[in-house]
Image 1 (cartoon, rainbow, N blue to C red):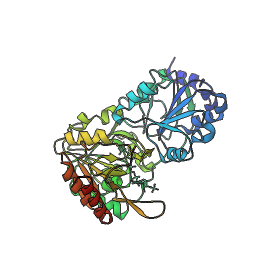
Image 2 (cartoon, helix red, strand yellow; image 1 turned 45 degrees about the horizontal axis):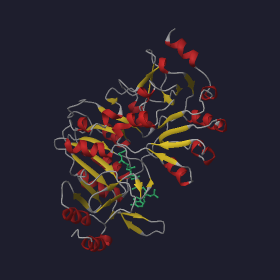
Image 3 (cartoon, protein in one colour; image 1 turned 30 degrees about the vertical axis):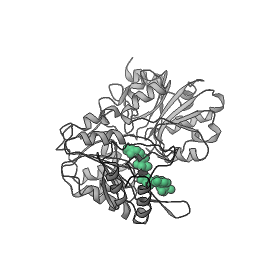
Image 4 (cartoon, helix red, strand yellow; image 1 turned 90 degrees about the vertical axis):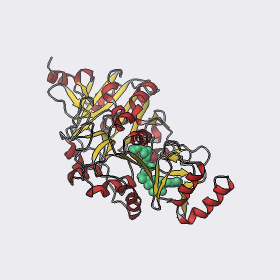
Length: 434
Ligand code: COA
């Protein structure tokens, strides 16, 4: 049978494909740009017939009905909360969370969720029978080997990203459904004046020829867009974002100085504008690799002058960083922050920056300091104090690598908002830090 015949044989409606789901199934719906809304909608339509079904997603980029309270009997977990998943959590939906360093995504999903069903959105099949996993491959390439049922939603609007691994063969697929639909985008907000101020301290330290990982959030974006006058930058990143597309268009990124994959940008997944997706489509200068490759600290370290820029929510006086939770409440996910904090510092000339505004606004309009003496009980630490190198706010850069407790306290107080410095100093003295 030719691949085309096999394709026709496996083709069916979304409704018929989802009917193949059974009680007890564990369904990995992927997420980000690769979430198939029609498949999740059909699953929602049969929700009352299903028992003991669990769903795993990440960075869900659409407001899907499965997140509603009327689906509470379908358990839901995420590896990285998006705004939609956060809103559902606030609404009382119980959302379990897998915490791990992103290089272990494949292992974590296989060993601790072990999906029996995969919902995959991918490009149309090529002549060799492969569906390209496009912007957010989500480890589907290997999970198909153990899943009982793989349903591919073929969407001809998905860009094709060059890759050796991030594709699946029709022989591993059980059902194929077709629907052309726009791919979820991530609007890139104009950086604020404050974002740009924080970014300025990082940008002035980044040399020409540096290789970049830039994370998610306003400050990370501000750093990216501010690098426009740099030269010969490279990209080796878990998440490819709008600023990297912008810097490539402007000629600041050419990947010429990279020792690994010279001339190519390497990404684990991507989210941005439609224009960015068009740029990535079949672009010979861009490669998609599995996250266990992009996020391997030892591979990161093989790039000289590697610069990692990530954001956080709160830091204590010793340099312990909360990036994924506010207190005990999960906000996003661990992602690859620690992978890149470590990899960057192993790189010759490498640097790792973790950035934030010095304060956040409370519900009543007053401000709280994001630099605290101690995190509240139960707070979730993403990056430990022994891993941290630079913490940056709009008041400058705290250099914490291998510093003493007293040195750390002084560095942290110096980048706190002036309105909070006296109180932090008082507390630090009281607790014997100064
Ligand atoms: N206490 C209470 N609220 C706080 C807070 C604190 N210490 N710090 C921030 N907030 C609030 C902000 O006011 C904001 O509220 P709003 O949504 O009502 O405006 C919200 O939390 C988000 O903060 P912000 O600083 O705007 O977040 P961001 O969009 O810039 O993203 C992270 C920053 C840290 C959440 C994001 O980078 C992340 O999820 N990191 C996870 C790990 C990682 O870095 N992985 C590697 C790259 S993917």
